[in-house]
Length: 100
Image (spheres, rainbow, N blue to C red):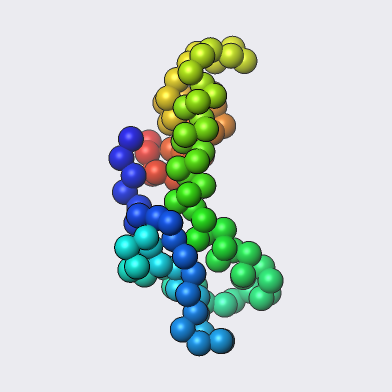
């Protein structure tokens, strides 16, 4: 499975107190610039969730593959992303990776 997003872990940086938050990739390059358009607490929560995305995806894939080494719940054993119509984790992985 090829991961095409910017390498993680991502971190947040703010150039000045009321400026936009910049999410930096593991290589130190900007991934996204977030400008505040919402409630400050909601904005901060959204930025933190986005900055954790690479690690969340990596952990989801690893956890999925450990869990689904054997058949259960009527679904055959499979690897991450192989059964998005039957497995919720696969559906999320396919969505995150832009797989069809």
